[in-house]
Structures are given as C-alpha cells and as structure tokens.
Length: 530
Image (cartoon, rainbow, N blue to C red; front, top):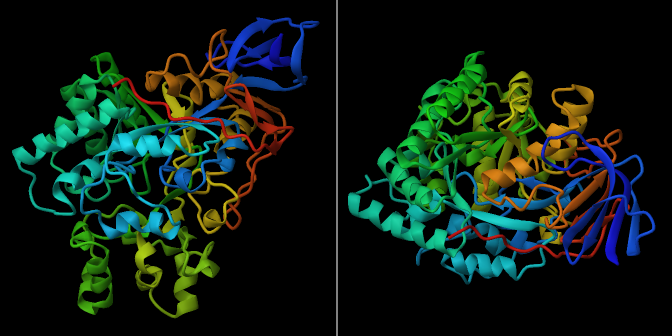
C-alpha cells in the first residue's frame, strides 16, 4: 500500500525531457513507483487530471537566513511550489560570527526577539534545524562573515596572515555543512576585498568540491571586468562557479548581455565549470545603504548616522565614484521606488521623485533622511528600480545553463514578518516564470522551465538525488495548473500569493493541499559534502 498516489497527471519529471501521462506512488517520504497505478491501494489519492506534476522547486538564491529563524514556515515559497531554498548569498550569511558582533548585523535578530546564541556555522545550522521549516534549507557561507570574524569592519589592507586565518574559518564552515561559498563584491566588505583574498577562499571551496556563487563586482559600465574577474577567479582556484543574478544593470551597453554569454561560452570551452541564474523580473532591489561610498560604513552604524547628520559629510556621501546603481548618479529618481521602511511605511510604493516633492527636498536628501529616521534598522531599508532589461532576462532564460531564482526572503503570516518585504518577485517568482515566460512569451517550454528550478540547481549544488521525479528520489512534489498559474504581486501590494498551485508535498507530507497552506513543516537542513 502506498501512502499517497497522485494519479491522472502530466508528469514533468525535471530532466527537461518531454512530459508524459502517469501516476506516482509515494511511500515513506520517497517516490516508490511511477506508472499506471489504478486499483493499487493507497491511504490517500490525489486526482491530478489537467495538472502538471513536477519535482518540488528549488530556489538556488535567497536571503532567508534570518527570516526562517523567526518563522520557518516559509508560506511565500510553499504557496508557489518551492520545497528547497539556498541561503547565505551575496557574501552575507548568519554565521560565523566573531566575538564582537556589529550592531548593524544584529538589528534584525534583536527586533524579532531572536537570541543569537551561536558563533560557528555548525551552531547556526543546528539552530536552523531545530526550527519548524516549511522548506528544506541549504546554506552557503558568506565571505563578509568570514572576513568580519578576522577583521571586523576594518577597511585596512588585508595581510597574508589574515587571509590564512580566513581560510581556517572557511574550512570549519565547509566541514560543518556549508553547501558552498558566496561573495557580494558590490557590497561592503566584498567591494574592498583584494583579489587574492577571494581567490584563497575560493580555492578552499574548490578543494571541498562545493559551489562558488558570486554577486560580481560590477554589472553596468564595467560589466565585462566584473564577469571576467569571476571567471578568472574560478579558473585559478579550480572551483565551480555560479554567477548570481547575471542580468546587467542600467548603464551597461546594449550588447552587454550577449557579450557576457559569449565570454561564458568561451570559458566553458576552456574547461571552466561555470553557470548562472537570473531573476525572472525586470525590477532590481537593494539596500539604500549600499548606494553610499565604502568609507561610509567605517566604524559601524552609529558612525554612519553621525555622518548623515553632518551636512559636509552628507554631501560627500552623495559623491560615490563606484555607485551600485547608475540610476542614482544619473538622478533617475522617477525610476526608483521605496520598497521597505519600518519608520515610514506610508511612503512605500512611491518613487523618490514623489517623496522629494512630498517632503519638499532633493530626492537624494530624502533618501538619506529616511535612513536616519530608520535608526538601527537602516541597513534593512530597501528600494527597487527598473534597472534590468526585459530582453536581457528573456535572453538569459533561453540559455540551457541558466537557472531561475528569487533573490528574496521566505515570509509568513508571523506578526514579526508583517512589515518585511524581500522583493517584488518574492511571492510569485515561479509563477512569473511559468506564466509570463512559458505560457505568454513562449521563451522556453514547460519542461525546460521546470528543469531550471529543479534538476539544474540540484546538479549545481551537487545534490544529484534531488530535483527529479524518479523512483527512490525524495517525495518533494508540486501539482499545478500550467494554464492558470499567474503572479499576482504588484508594486503597491507585492505580498500576494499566486494562482494555479494545488498541492505541494515535502518528503511525502502535504505542505499545500487544495490550494491552502497546511500546518505541516517537515523541512530540514541539507548539509554540504564536507
């Protein structure tokens, strides 16, 4: 007798091969049989007539490290078919922590009443594993955390001895179960890290056979240098490379995306193991603090607030020679929208051109004023913009080595989550892929789209038993209607669950049933290969 039989569905098995009609029998949390199972006994039967039955979706790039500790149910992900997340991206993770943790690193935990009782990566994973998780979670270790353990927020030149100590810290994280190593080279402290520091840590990652994921140093004016650095570092370190959210930003030349893909194709021919992922949206989001010069963060959050209050220092803060968004330096304030603010929720959804008018001040000053008003939570303030090109996103999605991901936070109905938003794609990124790019644009087939969010990310992570519907695989399954799936998120109301998803099972347990979230949270931490 099977625990569950999903019958009469169209099986999209995650491999990219043609879909087929069939039934799936689940027992003991794994796929036990695939075929025609009419008349076979089961405790429960699900009629999937007119529905696609696929492996649970894997989000290879999220920033849910902290939100999953507040509430691990991850409703925003479960409701769109996600059964696994990979946190610790863009050089930032929840561990390791040094003995002297910076206040701006802890503000999110403090605000939610989380007791940060861990220091090591192993302790963090154990703490996460004790949470009630609605999704399985794998965690990368961020370069920023490793560096801060050794150097704090110092901007001083890294010494050879400090790099050696960083590799010892990284080794401990990989042995504890980190699934890979990530950098955020547009963000502090990645943007001041010398190349040999990154390469040494990458080499350590490569020795463990783990994945190196990078938010490259530049994706606009100097996009080619940013991507070339990532490829050269992986080649030199003999590490497998995943380029995160690869689409170029506003300010890059029109041919930047095609040129980058050519660069990657050449690297692959020369033996570099490189792939990439993309956000299925033309909106880009980041922290407002990230728009400030590197030196603005020296001394921590209180020092930054003092600089914001000083008129002379404030003017210098506006003069950033390496802006994360060229939209800011070009004063395209009508294209930049406030996405998250605890202190000024009434302004969320307005452009900074509108906020400047409302406050009778220059839009840049309005942004800096909002940072001050946010207080200790200033690093959590977000804005969003049309920094990406829809044609670039589509071109990426058409490439067979391109995974698709959210770059967002797993959120839930927990009271502490109510003011939190990760991005405009957070509640409907899979629906946008399957609805907009597959059904509406025909940019790729349903089978290939499912592969980009199942077996492809699983293979990049070295998790070969996941991401496909085959006998013996974990019973992580999503049942959805390809004709009805749609993203409902809007600029002013982004926290809207999508349509078209009927059932989600994680290890054979229903986390979504008949379109409604269940109370089950059977997820666990997936550790790396050590």
